[in-house]
Length: 180
Image (cartoon, rainbow, N blue to C red; front, side, top):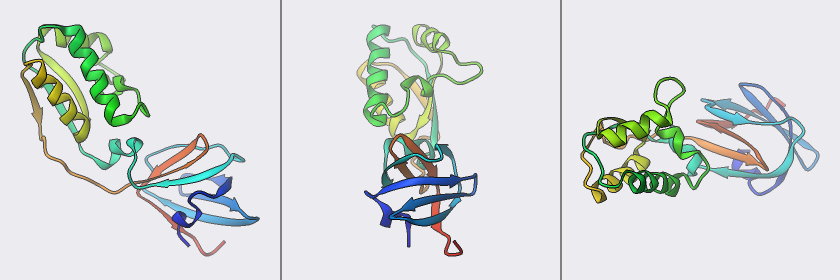
């Protein structure tokens, strides 16, 4: 049994902890050990159709390396430049994540700092997965803005996502535990 066998089937979240997830399907209980859990939003008792993904916009934060990019010149039209960056990020994330998550952090880099850096043509522009960075670099080229992206090479890791209605979990692996 693997988690893909429950794909597109209605399941109930029976229980979960940091290392396992138990699902009820067709009156049977299935326990999956979770390896390399990165992010989750689960509610015990939730019922919905299980969807399994190896590729999904939510996964790129984990499956692709993060590239830090600095701006070195001013755009002619800062407002249009920022709008194009937002669209470039949303094209990759499909709005599963907030585009501002890649241009701000929880500490020092606020949205105002980002706007100041754009208007000054100097400072950190973003820290984002490789595919998002590539899209933003195209925006910079279109606007004739000089940037420096550090370690701009794709490195990938495998992660999996399961969704059950509005519930989700991202991990490196879900492994069936036969000792149910």
